[in-house]
Image (cartoon, rainbow, N blue to C red; front, side, top):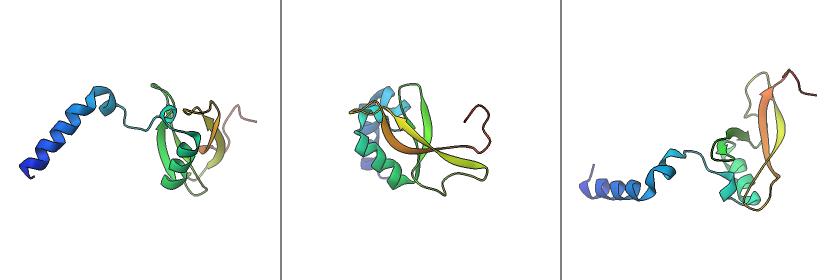
Length: 99
């Protein structure tokens, strides 16, 4: 690797700090509802943090779930609302305790 690029990468990661590096998934609380919905739609399927300790996989359309799963609408907190209809979550078709 080019020494200049290596030095730039090192400075970048040092500047990010340990918290930013440990958070590998975007945090919905730092996005607008519109931005979070657009991110899910653009990616098709993405893992997002909804707080510092919770995360899940969200999908935007059919075809992102595996066989035996169905899509369930889901709402998450974002920077501008506590109930953003972000898209869907894949759940087992015959999940116990669901009506």
